[in-house]
Image (cartoon, rainbow, N blue to C red; front, side):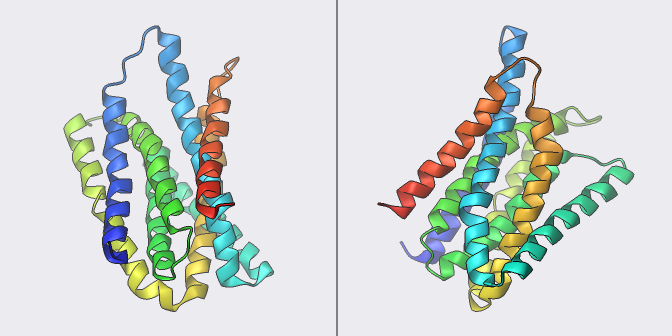
Length: 240
């Protein structure tokens, strides 16, 4: 299988995890009630753990390598956090807050763009990043469905249609990265670091607060489990 076929397959599968997560939320019926609540918070925390793993194990190390200027790398990461804060502020001012859905889009697009670029460069972390994107899209799709379903005038049909339309976005964005970013490694690294700052902001602003429950231990363990899955994938790709 050539690289272009791999990119299309990986990103399409990663995007398909969004409606798959929504389908899981659609069929979510647990009894007793406490189990339903704890499961939901655990899913949110698991997604946060995967996002931290993606930042710590792929995006920041690779981004630093391509930028190779420590001070500028920090500035790019900080700029990403500030930019995502401004986006959320504007959305909040217009009363259009959808933190889970926005988090999904704001990390999915730059990550797939970077994925295409590192595929073109032959980086061994490309399959790992694709795995991370898919794993984080599953709980993000789950949480986004619940969030969108709770809004006025929403319907499951419209939400699933929106999620299905996001599947081809991954391959298109990744191909743009494959065709253009491989020639500009500094820009590729800058995008990875910028996205990392934004993801960290979203984790601590939107995801982590929703994951916590009083006197419950499963959600924090879900975050640990998510990061452990990321470490396992990184160790498997890196080898001995």
